[in-house]
Amino acid sequence: MSDITATPVAGFAIRKAVAEDVSLILRFIRELAEYEQLLDEVKADEAQLARTLFGEHPTAEVLIGEYRNEPAGFALFFHNYSTFLAKPGLYLEDLYIRRELRGLGLGKAMLAHLASIAVARDCGRFEWSGLDWNRQAIDFYRKLGAEPMDEWTVQRVTGHALHKLAEKARVG
Image (cartoon, rainbow, N blue to C red):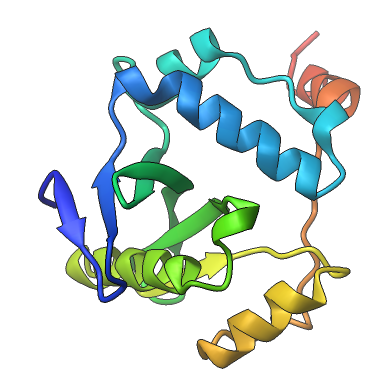
């Protein structure tokens, strides 16, 4: 992937994030969390992001979207794996476009760019989760050809429950 990729949207380009973008990434994470009414759940800080995204063993990748040379949004993604397909998948953890720039096609351009990465990396699927209450986003995803996984429910273990479950792995 080259450093900066033009998109079909005039004035909009996508680039791979670098370590110097950590404060911008955190700002976008907080803006997204505020929009999703989950700001109180953000525990990330710049040091953690620098370590996990740009350290010795990065666990995810980030793209920055720039509209007219100004930061417009970001996408954070990583690989998962499909045993049924015996192929990697691309999982989009977060996609965020600044409120005042929505409706210009930037989100669609970011998703198309991510799909092109998935195809180039021979991924068998490209997935993400959306909030049930966000009808506008769900309608947008349907227009792109995304299908809901109605028979699947996301399961999550976090915080105290995660540590409690991990303790069960200890012998003795």
